[in-house]
Length: 335
Image (cartoon, rainbow, N blue to C red; front, top):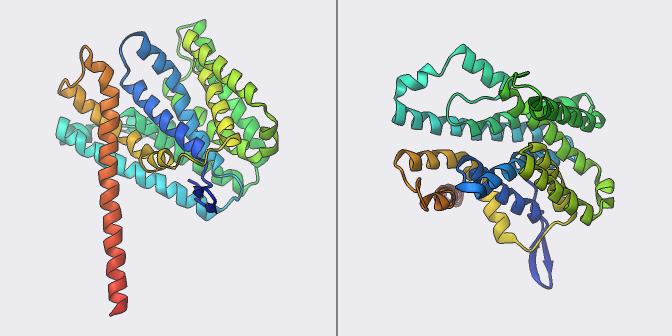
């Protein structure tokens, strides 16, 4: 997401990439897997409640790295990159759906209702629900293009806070008093009330660097822990949303530069891990692999390991093909 800058010092080569953000992104990706394939018992319930910090953190990362230079072509490139990733995900899960359920079952998903839910609320109708994140991220980049074009940057943070407060009111406070559904649940997990608001929060953290630097580390730690406790005891997502914001600010204030291996692991494999894990987990469930007894404790770890191996294998193939192509170009030039 950022440009790596190499600095030669007395202790060797050091990258200026914020590796703290990379490390937390990798941890967040692991928590997403614990959300979709929870551990048994109280441990699993606690992990599920804490895992709600992950997706807001991802959106904040994308917004933060859009700060500094509004460049229309750069934002379009980022958008097209996510469109490409989403297209590959749709292709992958489309093929998986045909293999597991048949072509007719896949075609049956193409209804006007499903297409409208996808367009309005980012609800996937091909693949698993986790794909909503990619669609919401595309919407966030498109909204950012409009914000930059009409110079609404100063209004970004108030709008983001208002949308988050509205989401908390409708989906966490109102249900305490009534079982009636006020708005569709899918709206509460969409670009409009999660993706775009936290994208704008991430940008605002980058834009308010001086204010961020004045925040005390101990304040961030205390608020982060309190947020986690609130979510663990009440089940409200808003608690770990505070945790996500505090962790992100902490990462910005305290960037690590000596964890290159973990940073590269996150940079190379986080997105693949996010996209692949429901498919791998579904195969585990279909064939009853690690689904009972003590095996449930090992299922999330096994899913992570297999996804990382697949990602490393495909990354190696891509690198080799690029190397061969470049070598071919050099040989043709020498001729």
